[in-house]
Length: 262
Image (cartoon, helix red, strand yellow):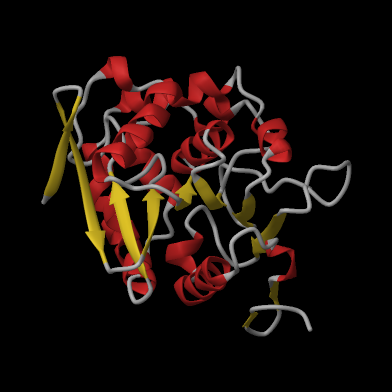
């Protein structure tokens, strides 16, 4: 287990591969562990970091750190501690929110951002999630397949207050507006069958900048990286391989992932 000390508290992370750095941020269910296949898929060309946010996995449980502001600050402190400069961020659920908030504040540091199941459409997630324990939430969001084991086994480690605090904070944050204004190359991914995060319609009203692209996985739920790993990893690698500053809007899904439209 790898860990660093931030504000006199343990922050757990793991790292795999060599190359340009990418950081993977987990969601409300599980921890860094369900990113292992994704880290392996990226590690041939990139140095992939995955860390546990405050209140999750093996990172310290301290309720005063559970706000979205503190979770975002954790990412900044982690990067400073590891000596990471320009970076690509891949966030999922809660991690997608943290990645977006960080990119909006530090756009000169974030080269590109891939956000999975970002709740850009609604701010009523407290009602949509309901009053559940981390294990009950895992049962609701996961598909009961072998690929879900890592997320399911890690769910009980989460502090329920860490989930609740982040959901309450969302009530005062307009993620759609933040996402619209982001100048960083951005790829949004949603699962059509997600039981909690409603797939937004971003095809009109100027909701997408020319640096943002939206992909929907028709056969996935809340965990596209676990439901359809081959397609997810192909898309991720194609996105990461784009030149810095290049828009991802040419990435398409047909019978297989195509890097660009010719």
